[in-house]
Amino acid sequence: MGLTATYNLVHDSECRDEDTVELRLIHEDVDKAIIEAYGWRDLLDGPGQTPVVNPTYKTFPLDHGFHETDQGTRYTIGLLARTEIIDRLRQLNHQAYADEVHLGQHKGVTEKKAREKHPDLPPPSPEIIRKRKEELAARGGSDFSEGAEGALF
Image: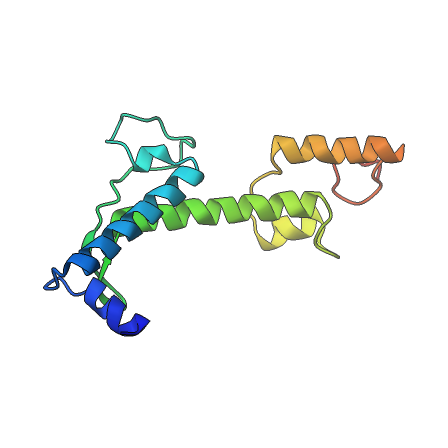
């Protein structure tokens, strides 16, 4: 049996085959391990048991089960949790981009240009600001580039 046939059974709510049920449980364990790795325990615990790490986050149970998706019925996490996870990943992505721009890792993109294109871009993280200052100190000088922390021009 190939992967397509196997996953057709995983997503079939009528299938109660022991191996298929076990595969669903494995997927739940993988989902939970990933959530744990991101430090989002609030999604694993009951509402209010674990404080959220970011005040903009909302807490929803993962709600594993058979849910309607754009691909049809799938055995997956619920829509509210799925949406929250995507929002959190988007925030992490935006923060990573802001940090990379601050460190000069995007050729030709200054912080000013990045903010013009993405007005809601978060500020660089404190760790990245510290890292940039350490890099500048190690080089024995200032950063004369436009928009940099402590720039002269």
